[in-house]
Image: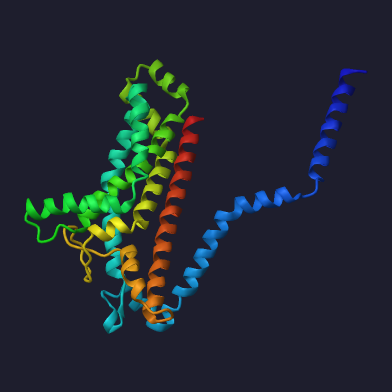
Length: 313
């Protein structure tokens, strides 16, 4: 038998095997595994549908403009404007991001590129443990330390402000940012570093000019996940933000966020009432904000990945 004929027979055999695999019947195990893999998607869809069905009713009952851009939430007087809570959420999250992103990135750079292996093995698990501490513990510690410091040492009338909540929230999202950023930096191929060193670059130049651009998509994912946790945080923000009914942009004043609003008002709302639907409407707005943040993050990740692939060709 010639070599060419043998090759043709092997290809024919492989094609028959592929066809046979493709014709296999869907077994019970396949169905169970598919349902298990789809469970998280199903839960998210059901939660979203339930929230929207309960929340959209605020539009015909109260009005979309009055609800979204109203400046006051006052249940006894049937005022359900959520603009102050949206602004409060933005303030707290931005403060947390301004602190956590540079600190988290620098910490990840140290662990990934500079720290000795023994230091990395000690610090990495400790940082990850921070993520397992309940948020109410962060809120209580922040209240006993930072809030009292602002009141007693700096003369604030109340230490429960957007700034206080943002500082504590930045500590809470640091483990997420550091862990994912560190994994992203470690995933950069060693050949990139070696090529940079071969051209005479220092370690810092290699980190800044090669490693960081190469891991930009992973770093963006770390920031977005940190944003996601910050936006959805409830208990610590409820403890520390102070609360405020009026619209204001002063970070050293008390604010309400969408999550703290839901926490405070939902137990007192009657099922089916206008206030009840307004609370679920606020939850829908929170869903929308989170979706927009994730969408922007996905677009940035694709842009950075495409840019880096183009530069590496």
